Image (cartoon, rainbow, N blue to C red; front, side, top):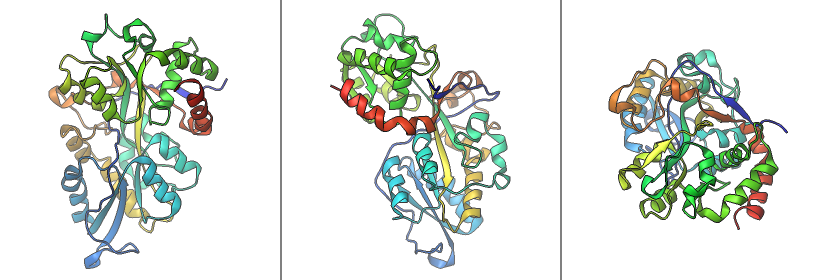
Length: 358
């Protein structure tokens, strides 16, 4: 059986976090077609999520616009809808931010241009895991987070230390798992294979184990907000969630805990790529270089918007809270092979609907 994750990722430096949610499309200004904005400025169209818009506008976009005499236009939304726009050719996007799961689809469909790494020198300053998550020819990850377990200790007997705990009596009738169609859904399939005792991915064992957990599932969540709401109302004791959202759980349940399971938490990576056909490739590469700079990464981390992959950023104390940070954390992350995931996701979704989500 083919192994579909990279195992434990060994790097010598610290890492970071960001994961994306959707929002309605918006722009930072009025722009004309053809790479030019009003006033004779160049135009750079960026496709990204809709969160922390004020921060990005003032701390990321504005300085770049001033230095390069460019107007940045933002097209916001969730991963799927923004990737579909590019597929359909219904947008003039130059730079696209996507989770690695969706970025791999774009690469396989030939939607992204190859980057010139010599024009993005800050790539040499980021953690190894972030440099080429989907291959040397494509964009880096500008953030790396982790999927672990969050739980309410008042609703669980004893400590939670392993993915296997999700299948035990600790989470009887009060568990949630990500739906297969969510960004972290394939990770649930892999963790089920591990809990079933397999060192390499075993599809049959994974789905049998997921079916075994199904009676304890209150709901398979598709959006993090669903997890937060169920957790706040004590409808669930917990389940797998991305660390960046733990602050929301902690606000609702102050005693909540987040743990990286002993088998290893999963790496959640967001990437940045250049859309094929862009007439602003060089400017796009300069923007990617800016996103990876110490200045941007440090500001994002301290604002709790993003976490640094630039190794020159050093954080301490409260600045490290709520983000995935530190070599001791990154070295234990498990990375899925997104090419393998995308080859099999349709079959897994069909099987999930038949055998698990009943």
